[in-house]
Length: 193
Image 1 (cartoon, rainbow, N blue to C red):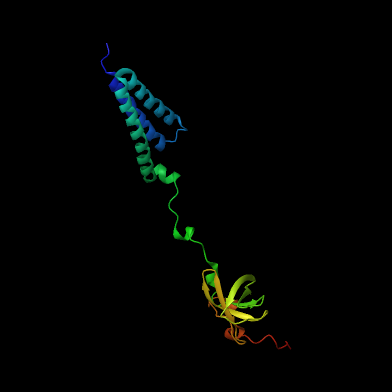
Image 2 (image 1 turned 45 degrees about the horizontal axis):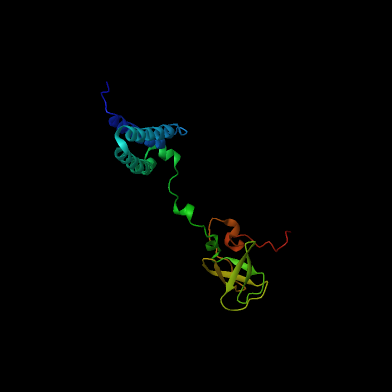
């Protein structure tokens, strides 16, 4: 005496399989829930073919083909909002983490020494590092002091420095960068007597 139609059992197995697919995404089980979900969906399709013929069996195949991927997509869409998803998945990167840092912007106003003839481009040593630079259209001889006047992406523009030109002091707190006259100290050229 069979009280429940096999079609109801097939539908229940399909629902259980779909639920197990979603649970596999939210509960790390090492594939056990995924295996049980696959077995349940296959059993539902086989029962539909065996007990109700090819028409009902193909309907169950169609439901499995549409429902399982749709549920997986919805579960993955909802996963980042769950507490487990927030622990497993990383947040979106910030602009500072993604965009390259341009250290060349800090060179603006710094002094350097020409390393190779600039006709109008060449190598310049600034704070012990060598950079490719471009002059303002004039030739600059090696060994001559230059000052950085413009930094645009990879292009550093320099001009010859005046003989009495000093670097701008960026930090007033940096005592070592300030001239002796500003600190009120006597010149060290005079011998101690």
